[in-house]
Image (tube, rainbow, N blue to C red; front, side, top):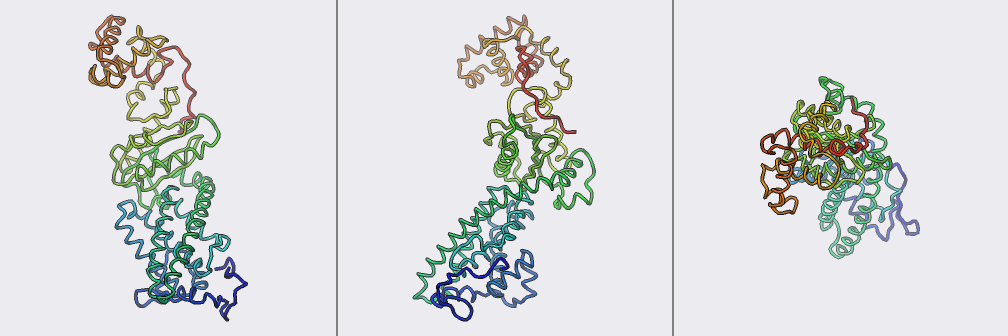
Length: 466
């Protein structure tokens, strides 16, 4: 390839081609690889390869036409097989295009390493590493899933190569060559994964500038009601079909905010089996848009269950479908953010949990007055009052079942009944007589402790995006 000549040990005797005569049979079999299909010529190769033409030309120069064509043919066949076996996500255009490129380049590189007889990371053309990583990142493939795909591709490539050896290597030399080849490709895989991970991280940093200037504007304009136009088609070739889930994140501190949000977004994307994960910065917030796969049930619950860094804060919308659903999940994420900005307790605000709170919190003064009027006698500091409020809130939220609340709080049903009776006594009315208003007021007091105890509200989130 253009990055330099062969890295074979110069101390070994060589023939007129520059190949070590001691190991001529080792490298000869690589050059004897040929496509299994018929009628492969330069035109066929141009039609079927996935990588850039200049990259393929370098491999043809390095390996020869036939081995390069064999790798391209094998990559296409294996990619189709894996797409069928691995589910809908892998069969999508986004995932398929990434996998095809990654596998093709990986297979070609492994042949080069075998030919060179050792793995030298400096011998790998950096264009290939950057191309593989950029392709994965720009298509929204999370880093962990990307790494897994590289490892999986390596395992399959190794299998394909080893299966060719009996056809190309004499039987007496086959055991030694199998061991040598396996050791070479394993050494390559370890080094290659490290290189592409580094390149992925570098691409992520570079892309932040690119995404915020173009794709970010398109996403936000469409989310706020603009009609998708021709300009947005380059970013969203699949349109807005399927499910969507949107979140806005920030950190309580300042160190590592971007990295924390990226890792969380990737873990959620993997948990959700998302077709694509889009992450960008806007107005001091990290926006995360998951384009969901066919399975969208309990997507909010699955995001809630993903481990988060201690300082990361998340405002999450509802799951939506199609273009209207995309706008809905964005709008509800904004409403959840507004609740957080008002000082609501917690670190994770999912709109399905706080939809009624978001409506009531539109007028802060009216909200505070409503709480005082409905549950005034239950307000105030102190653990006993907090326990009473929490018990009554859960009692009303769980269909007034003392048994259900007792199980949640690890108390006896009798204790639950006593606390509910005490609350009724203090308020001068039966809890069940005004259950709806009392529950709403208790929910507000739960999410905004300063309303119940006169405590200062929590530090606000960054400004609400327009």
